[in-house]
Length: 168
Ligand code: MN
Image (cartoon, rainbow, N blue to C red; front, top):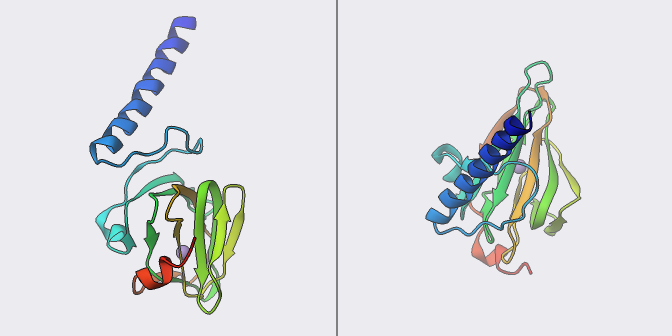
């Protein structure tokens, strides 16, 4: 039994080393100590084209009985997504559960709001916004897609350097 446990732990250690090595191969030095949630893979092209900088995505749960998918999103320093809207006719929106580092979220017409690990930020449906890392910090948030009717995501223009660079 001990031997099986040891083998399992070794496999887990090798697996996480593999993740770190593949990240380092891309010249992105992800911190050794991030949240306990998996980092996952580089964002696929269908999403990365709406991001400035490097981000990773780890789907955590997508149980069809609940229909409320949760993913971990890891942003490199300075990385942020474009302005976008989580549309819904009823319900919907997005919950950001911050689990590592420092980041930003901004709802259209409001000042940017600083995010830190341990904070939960609710993004109402049908409100234009963006979110991402601070310029000097890695950042991770879990993203919960709140169930709703008639939901869809609309991706808009990038957050300009003029807006982002003013943030500390
Ligand atoms: Mn969003």
